[in-house]
Length: 575
Image (tube, rainbow, N blue to C red):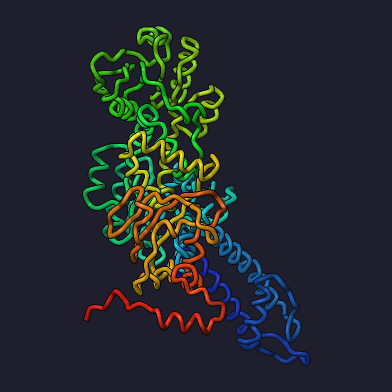
């Protein structure tokens, strides 16, 4: 508050001095100029009555001449004071209005309001650096989860658009340079409620600066960064950035999955956060992409990622680029943009099975896809969208698979935040063979009646599952299979996907594995179905009844049974 107060005093110094001087001189004059009382005697107004009169005179209220009618000399002085005080007030009010519109003052007020809002946060929140297309999708996704967000962006046009958004949880906005550490501190990076920093600007070096500053200001806060350049990504990883999202590599890996193991792509699509659903043809999502001959138009970061992801497969790859030497394209690259029929025919478009429009120009990509369809109506089209507003054009062009860079980043970031075990499962699931993947799909489909499954995270801790924690802590035994059973019947309602124990991830753990303290278990099953673990987490009586076999109806007998059969604690505190 002091910075705003001193700024007001500094900017309003001259108007205030002028106004005070007018009032002081006017008051002094009223005391010096003689008047007459009711009897015609000479009378001088005291300072109190003079200031009282000048106060309502200066604001043009005009209560009248007090306490006696004025003499001509007094009225002449009052006449001069009226015009002078009006000028002083107009000067002061005008200066105040100019100050209210001053950018420095508005920044100081907004920063003050921002700091107050940050201090009032009493729930977990994330700091999002950069409110572009990606930041908008992440903010909307977190708001749908009921998560508070703090936005930092220097562009007022972007942040002002938030006023038109109808979000469940309104974000707190700071218009400032995200690379300055003091702004991260102001945003609450040292708050106990801060759950992480998300740097998703379009500039990789800016994201790197945010990551470095975040780790230096508070090394314990997780940092998630967007990076499209490998050198910058390696730099981020060198000082412990928790997660680095490269949209080109991520999408290229999905294309590889769709050609080599489409069943695994289907599983990953089930579990990844789909806050913004991707546009993909249903047949491709089910059966995958054909191999054969692929044409990649544009050998930038996206085109290179697709080429390198598929280079070791049995797919024939043809690259089309306007400047293959500058892009260091592979040998045999056809010179051109791919928007002309001549260039596509040179790439043997008639024999191609898939074409990828990978340039950074949406108009060129649309032209490539439309021209390719005219020359080969059976070809599968994959298009890159650089600007979210152009996405609808690609849908109208009937593009089979649309790559939206912002969407890929947002979905992956939201998965890391809201479903950390799912993110681990997706990472380790690439080791599954096609047969194991198909078997898992069959099990999930039978369990969910061919509907998309839901996932649950079970943490055996004193905070998350006190009843189960107490049972295991006292030497009790319970298996993963028991946790996945129906509360009343012994049939499976969930499938264990991942067990995290002691920092080690176990993919598709054995259902007969005994649960240990601090285990984290990822299971999937049918939506809106309650598995036994949900009922056992904090219900000590139910654990005693279903797991320990203490089914006595009378509470006193159950208590006596527990005392008699209570096992010794398996853990001892170190002295």
